[in-house]
Image 1 (cartoon, rainbow, N blue to C red):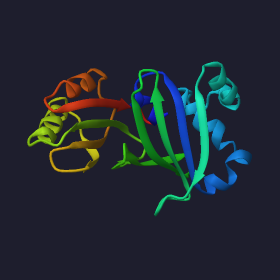
Image 2: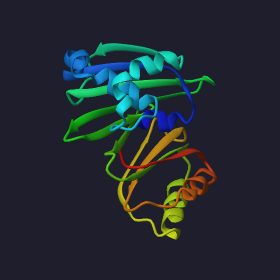
Image 3: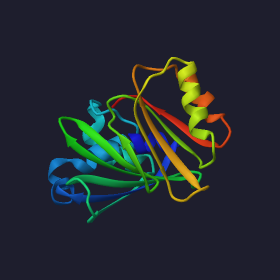
Image 4: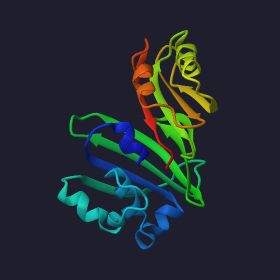
Length: 193
């Protein structure tokens, strides 16, 4: 569901790599169905979850599931790469950490920290002076309290990602204001999952 939100368009292909316990038990435990349901935009309590593979096929969504080993990853980890109808791609690595909780640890190969328990912003941006300050200032102007913040970049001056979890439920219009800031490439607001 997080990968689908970040793609921000209809997915055409999903490449899913399963690690650890997921790689051993995915068929019997329905991990494939749950992951595909999220990619389709279905919530975890949607009754159609059991039918997600058929729904994906009818929607023309190509699904490729493989097993892999991810160094240092949680035993219940998936690395999902989605390709949209326009050719745009997004990749996330996340784990099911128990009790219905998740932890997204990578976005497009960069470190992240999203628990899914709070409203979150994922801000892809150019690594330029003042960008973090501009984003956090905008949040402060709208009375938003940050409860978790993570920044990662590939290289100085390149692309970076901010993952920001926030208390409460900020107005959706705030996401557009963040997206319009200088050096911001995209901003995605995610509701708790």
